[in-house]
Length: 114
Length: 112
Image 1 (cartoon, rainbow over the protein chains, first blue to last red):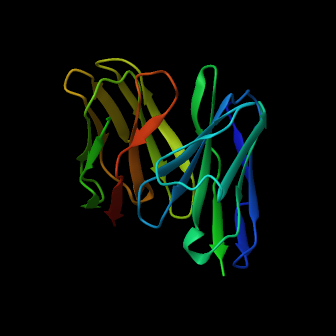
Image 2: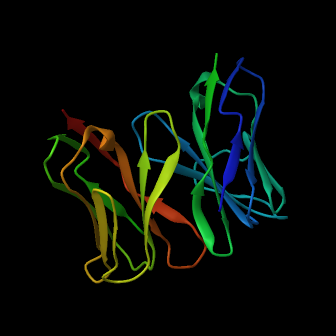
């Protein structure tokens, strides 16, 4: 149980374009979705927390206009990296949390901006 | 502010040996998690520790929690090469928000 499906697993995009990453909770209702980014050989950095039906809460230093988060339903949250640049290249991971579930991560998305 | 310190950062050990990874945190919490991450992959849940004195074991890994000392340990017994990975502890904020603070991670390399 408590599976979070994340897509795509890898994406390469051109600088200046936007990329959308989806996370779906398959067998539970994720009232909260956490979005992380991870640089090589570093720990996970929390970017934002989204709750279904409300605006996301961004961590200090994370640009809300660059990283758009939508959590329109209890099973789907999306992260859109807008006007991507090479420095946005990273590993993005989501984690869904709901009643009695909170520790399952998505499979991650490797974003490369060229 | 909750801070989580994990050590060592790097660990190279011979197969068959035992070792312990430590996770210290700075404020009260009622939940602590251990995860494993293989290169290029997401995090795999290993253990969830919910109470003082909790001990969980799976194969060659055993995790324990001392909430009074604000310390968790991940003990590796008779290491094998397949255990090579990065291990993270994560401590939940006490507010019940499901928000975690991650340790820095321990990169473990088991040498044959």
